[in-house]
Amino acid sequence: MIEVRGLSFSYGHRNAIHDISFSAGDGEVVAILGNNGAGKSTLVKCIDRIRIPCSGDVLIDGVSTGSMSRRALARLISYTAQRSECGGMSVFDSILLGRRPYIRWGAGDEDIGMCASVIRSMGIEDLQFRCLDELSGGEQQKVMLARALVQEPRVMLLDEPTSSLDPGSQYEMMALVRKAAEERGITVLAVLHDLNLALRFCDRFFFMKGGTGYGFCSGSDIDSNLMKDVYGIDAEVVMIGGRRSILID
Amino acid sequence: MEGKGTYSGYLRHKWIVLMILLLILLAMGVLSLSAGSAALSPGDVLRALFMKGRGQESMIVWNIRMPRIAAAAAVGAALSLSGCIMQNVLRNPLASSSTLGVSQGASFGAASAIILLGAGSQGGSGFIPSISEPYMVSLCAFAGGMITTAVILAISRFRSSSPSVMVLAGVAVSSMFSGATTLIQYFADDTMVASIVYWTFGSLSRASWREIGAIAALSAAAFIFFMLNRWNYNAIESGRHSAKSLGVNVDLLVPLSLAVCALITSVAVAFTGCIGFIGLIAPHIMKRAVGNDWRFLIPGSALCGAALLLAADIACRTAAAPVVLPVGAITSFVGAPLFLYLVIRKGGKP
Image 1 (cartoon, one colour):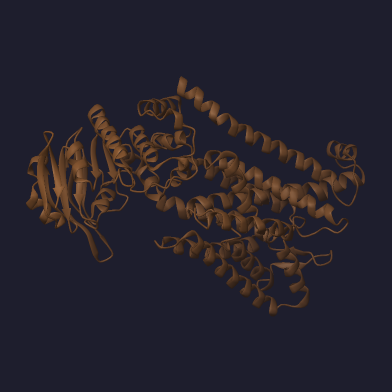
Image 2: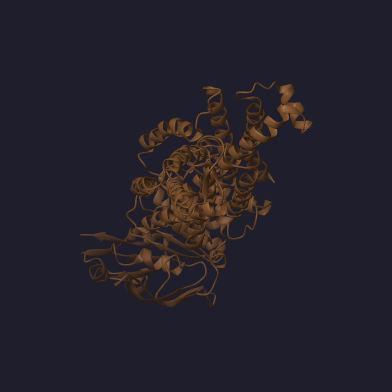
């Protein structure tokens, strides 16, 4: 379980996020939503202390992360960047990096076995010794997710994991995320822009506006008024095939 | 375990590359012992090696050629290690001590110590200066190298600083230090100016065993430091934010690594002068051979840098024998076209 308490951060004099609080349980997938510049990416970076918050705290299973070492924190939280720099590493080595918080000198049999197992479960064995920058965007995102999984985190932070993916790859990616959360009991906080994708795969929704939390709700609470307030757009929430979907006018 | 077997097989070729490099380095060493203006047969070399202290051959091998070989290996490894790590922590494939001006900064520091602080004196063999205060020269070279490193680090903190901006900044800083070196030369006497000009050519002949020992010891310590952080450098390869999330203390590791790079570069420059492009070329050759995996790239770059400088030194001693050409000029002559190739091919992007 993760609990975010009064998190604030500013770039110089500009407040990026202000007094953000919410909590999410084990195995829960939470979408972080809002317009560009609402502070979504900054929030996930602050949760992982990539950016050090000005105030506030993050607790995982009741333990504050504020005074933890980087290595200890990396065993609890994994973070997948909006745009990962691929470099010239092989897929296997990139995934093996997820074991870095556990490795003291060299990767052991257990670390290598865990990578091989995740690679198999995600069906990317044919890519494992290819160079990461030779892969498509969707394949690279899968590799980043595999790395996050071998990190064995309690909380997984995904910053726009479906950006630059085609619709098929977006659904495949989010299905993998959902499956990982359910099977491993990982709490997932995913920054997303596609509202229908969020409605399809996420349990709850944290809306942000102007650096502050606008609301934390379930799918049934999302309506046209909320869309208007958060995004400034006219939208209609309809049921299609038994699922809630958002149609933008 | 299936995964381990497959992965071990994948790593095997990288180990083979390192073994081949080690053999090439040893072969270069043997070749270098035989090459030079005094023609020594392999038999002479072997006799001199194993029957130390007998005859002229022994004197040539142990007092002239062996120190050169050791100096080439230690300096080549130091410069290459420095370039390899700089390229990683600055996320810039064009980074090296010579392209970013660290060598030039160190040169200025060393020249200041020799001319202004009287740490150098005219030796007995032509223009070759001897350094009477090697530690002072090293300290001043380190100060010069660190000033440049601090400037580069400050520039790299700007979010808009692209790899090409940093290289251009390096050119500017390097030009500033070259100008400053010229200025202090202007106030020096003719002999000292000649000494400094010769010194800036870069030469492996001036380092004594004691100085070679200092370079080798520092390079070995730096190598251990870099190898202890090899997983961290691999993590930085996926970006600084990703590295932080993988548990790397990036804010400490980056400046510390740059300081270690500046230290080994400065000491190498202080004792052998400016030897350009080894630090740029060797890591790039190794990236092609073992990929961007710093577990193999660090030892590979050290071996490759040592072998390249040894090869350059053999060329210097044999190309116009009995005249020995300055090794710094040769490495720049060969290295500059490769640098241009990298700039054109990658457009300065990492």
